Length: 56
Image (cartoon, rainbow, N blue to C red; front, side, top):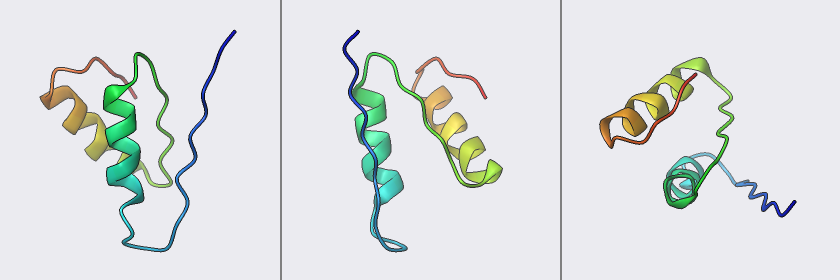
């Protein structure tokens, strides 16, 4: 089993979510863990809008 784990860490407003979603959208499969349900829902809506299958 080959797996690649990417962890985005940085200060507030440094682009962590943006960079994480760029990697996420390019991956064949991925898991996104958000610290807030609201952020998870925003990501869900963004991916749905781009036609990327996902669920919460």
